[in-house]
Structure formats: C-alpha cells, structure tokens
Image (cartoon, rainbow, N blue to C red; front, side, top):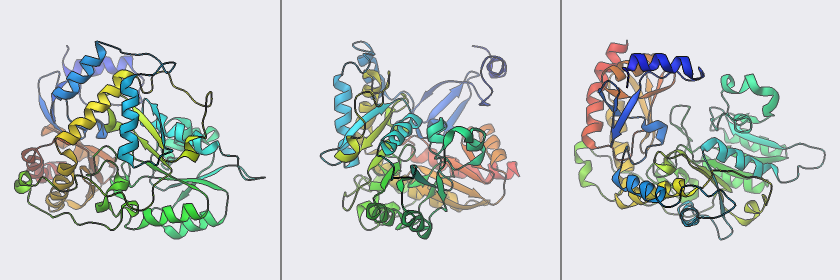
Amino acid sequence: MPSSRAALERYDQRLWPVFKPSLVLAGGSGAVVWDVDGREYLDLLGGIAVNAIGHAHPVWVEAVSRQAATLGHVSNLYASAPQIELAGRLLEITGAGPGGRVFFTNSGTEANEAALKAVLRRPAPSGRGHRLAALEGSFHGRTLGALALTAKAAYREPFREFTGEVDFLPFGDLGALEAALRRGGLDALVIEVIQGEAGARPLPPGYLAEARRLTARHGALLWIDEIQTGIGRTGAWTAYLNPDLGGPLTGAPRQVRRVALAELARQADVGARAPRAGGAPDLVTLAKGLGGGFPIGAVVAMNGEVAARLGPGDHGTTFGGGPLAAAAALATLQVIEDEGLMARAAALGAAWREALARVPGVQSARGGGLLIGLVLARANAPAVVQAAQAAGFLINATGPDVIRLAPPLILTTEQAERFAAALPRIIQEAA
C-alpha cells in the first residue's frame, strides 16, 4: 500500500470530489484505528456513530464470517432466518405494538425514504397536497426525498426543484408546532431527539411528549429519526425510550448519578434499560450503529395502520435485510446487551461531558450518552479537528464552533480521560 500522501493523490484522481478525506485508514481494533503509514489514532467518531461495538469485535467478526460461509445474499424474493429474527428484535427493542412491522434498507437515508413513502401513501385532504414538518437544524439524508426534510439550505437548495416543500419549524418551539398543526393538513412531523448534524443538540425537556400529544390530537403521524441516536448510543435502545433525555414517551426524567471517570468501572446498572410507559411514535427509522459497521437500515412501523400503508409493489429493495447484514446486526445487538454497553454509554457519557465542559475553550458539552457536542468559545472547530488528528484523535466538526464525538460504545475510561487531558493543548494549538 502506498503512503497516505500517495494514496490520497490517487483518491483525488479516481473518486468524485464530494468528500475530502484526510487519512487513508488500514485497520482497527476496538476504539483504535491506524493509517497506511502505521500511525495510530483514537477513533472518537466511530464512523459517525456507526461502529457501535468498535472495530473487529470478535463476536461480530465470527457472526459475519459464519453467515458468509453459508448464505450471503438471496434477494427479497426469499426470506432468511437472520432477517426474520432481526425484525423480531427490532419490534421488541423499539416497543412496537402488536401490529408493528419492519422494512429493511441499506442505509439511514433509504430508511427515511421508505418512511416518507409510508407517510405519503395516505390520501391528501381534498384540494390540498401533502404537508410534512421538520425542525430547523434537522438532517435526514441526502437523496431527494430525504433531502426535502433536511433543514440545511446548502444541502437542500441546489436540488429544490425536486425535493418539494416542507415546513421547517423553529427548534424546540411548541407554539410553532401547534400553529402548524392547527392550519390542518399536516401528514407527519419528523424529528430527532438529539440533532446529530446540528452538533448533538437535544430537544428541550418536555418537547417530545407534547409533540406526541399534539400530533395525535390533530391526526398527524409522529416519525422519530433514530438513525444517529439509536442502538444504545444514548444509554437506551432508542433516544425516545431514554428517560434521561426527558423522553415524554418514557415518563418522568431520571437523574444519572454523576461520577468521576475513574469511578466509572464500578458502575454497572445505570441506564441499562428504559421504561416503556406512555405513548409511542408511529414511525421509527434506524441505521448507523445497527450493523456495527455493516450497511443496514430499518423502518419500524409501530402500529398496524401505518404498517398496512405499503403493500406488494409499493416499495422494494434488492439488498435490504440480506442475511449478511442481518447477521451483523444481530451480533451487534448481542454484544451491546451482553457487555452492558447501554449502561456504559449513559454513565461514561455523563461523566465525560462534565469533564469536557471544564476544559478551557469549551463553552458547553451537550448531548446524551456517547453522542456529544462540544460548543467551543471560538469559531475554529475545523482547526481543532486538524490539531486533534495531529495529536492522534479523530473527531468531527458539525459547524464553525461545534465538535461532535460519537465513539464506539466500548470506549474505555482511560481512553476518554486521555482525550479530556489532551483537549486543552489541542484547542490552544488550534487558536
């Protein structure tokens, strides 16, 4: 393999210029990766919340290898045992009702596209077209349907002719939501409990509960995008089931005991499971961490009315829910459960946010579990990312003054402490 510099030159010559990678990675283990030059980095981005159980986890590797040796792909003209088992697990962990059903895709964007088709399948009110609402700061994908729900104008506007119209409501403003619903004809509200691309920005306490109440009252669907927040990342299987995020769909918020990072190993029972009281969304979309690194997404129709909207011929996929992807997802769910990684994400995330918020140059640390946004005192986040990479840490800027952390859920206390200790110098060097 050529050096990083030579490999990146070849990348520029051979691939579309929609990305600008800074490294060529060659391997990984746990929360550590290394490039083609042999230099190691602590991966605090996790493939953007994808590598939930780290790199090359032996349970995941064995499961994928075993499945690859038996049945790799069959198309959706036929079913496979891993697909059926995984659908059952997703209905269970999302708290779906008896009529709930699952549709598998290859990515989060495709999951949102399928959910969008389910929303639009209901006839529009007489004399009016379909209307949807999303929140300012939202990100729901880059294909044309999903792009219509993505608030950032730089992503959406060049393709506006094909993406349709969506009401983008002020973030956290229940009055604006109620006004949009009162106007009538709103088919669905799509929201993220924590907006990942907006820098791990959580909904205000109580918003989700009221959104569920208002949408139900006005006959609109509540669609929760858990693509970045789901599969244990926030300390529960989904963020809307996490009481520490003020989840209205789970009852009253619960306090996580704040502890020093060094004490974390003695905690084993924080946030392992969330109660499932109250209402539920109508649609949930999942991806990223679901496959532990293998491409897979899913839409969960949480009740029979929504599940029945799409039938034979209404939608399809060649690869979605294939045996390899389903086996990878089942292994990921098994590791998260067996190793208590939801409890770890809740406890480590709470303690780490407190430690990082005290670093000079950090105004605040927000988010939930191991999806964290660091709001910087200066608008130099890209420079901080570069300085961190030079120091051996992979992080991400979601805006001029916000850093996103979404490490593997197997991140150790020592690794978290190492970054917290290095961050003051990183910020200083980026100044």
